[in-house]
Amino acid sequence: MTIGKAEYARRRKRLMALMEPNSIAIIPSAKEQVRSRDTEYPFRQDSDFYYLSGFVEPQSVLVLIPEREHGEFVMFCREREPQQELWNGRRYGPQGVCEHFAADDAFPIGDIDDILPGLIEGRERVYYSMGRSASFDQQVMTWVNHIRARASTGAVPPGELTDLDHMLHDLRLIKSAAELRVMREAAEITARAHCRAMQFCQPGVFEYQLEAEILHEFAMAGARHPAYTTIVGGGANGCILHYVENTAKLRRDDLVLIDAGCELEGYAADVTRTFPVSGKFNDHQRALYEVVLAAQEAAFAAIRPGNHWNQSHDATVQVITEGLVELGLLQGDVQTLIEEGAYRDFYMHRAGHWLGLDVHDVGGYRVDEAWRVLEPGMVMTVEPGIYVAPDNTSVAEHWRGIGIRIEDNVVVTSTGCEITTSAVPRTVADIEALMSA
Image 1 (spheres, one colour):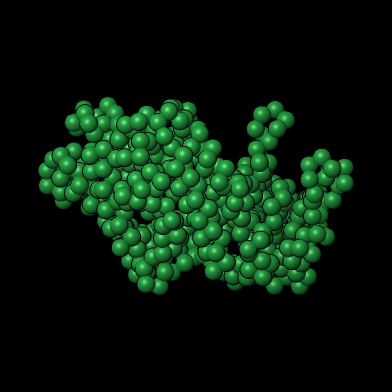
Image 2 (cartoon, one colour; image 1 turned 90 degrees about the vertical axis):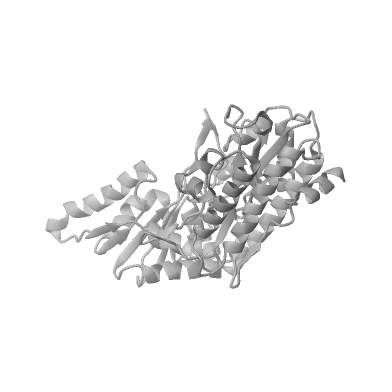
């Protein structure tokens, strides 16, 4: 693992430094999810839980108690059970959690109802993120109400229940050097996968075959799972933003849009490329593609410390609207069209999002109703696009059914931004050269 115990300990210390005195934080793990009957989806740990512990087993609860005499980091987890481990894999158990994950105390998850209320009692504030799991929400309130019911005997219930998300997610927004190393590697693996798909592509192959090439490259590099469901949209399917059927046969005269990224040690990459099935853009595809590419370049130029989050989006809107007017897909004054939102018929999403342990990562885009100012260590996507619906009769027929998105991952640096996914060709000439090779 790239990220070691010392970094997880620093993260917990930073979070506890933000908590009020005499408080407690409770963070449950993710749950296993049934796929069908008695089979389950591959388990993926809750990102907040993972960020603070690196522990990837289900049925666990992480507890932080600043300044607790007997240790601030407490875990509840599954016990070692040789028969269960024979069928379903090894477990660390409470002792292993202390040895390998630096917990100060660890207890069997079956004992949580007996132990955790005692840790909550007397605390002035409980930090917990309500609304993610109805069953665990109810469990937390049962513990609190149990303490309240004993108030007449001297039990002291917590005075306040506070959402943990704001503090924790602001910490997650700025990536450490170790996190950036993992994310750069995820970007490199994803770049290789996109290049592989471009070189494999030809008329007559199916969308799912390109998806298979992508996933194979991920797995062979040690990234066994994609960060999200891979999108491979040929022709008009590229105009469906979250198209995931991936069943159509690719036609010679169409473009294909691939949106795919691997997950490595919990961290996501997120890349989109659009390229011609035949290996050569036609004139109309090239014209729209060049507009999207210019919009992305304008966004890169706007990403630097001191600028705010939305400046890169505004830059893409300006370039795309100008391009649509120049090509005749929109008519009128550019600034008026922007003010009226006319471009949204062709460009209906934002220019990007935060990236990290979640593909749409945490962290507010606004602070006190103002756009958040960019800082070094933030990681984001830049993904302008133009989508001309196949039934859009307001434009000439040769534009219809063309969907183009170009997406890269960038790290905000002290002087601007670093494009971590630049190994995937972006220009028309470079894409055509790779495909012809």
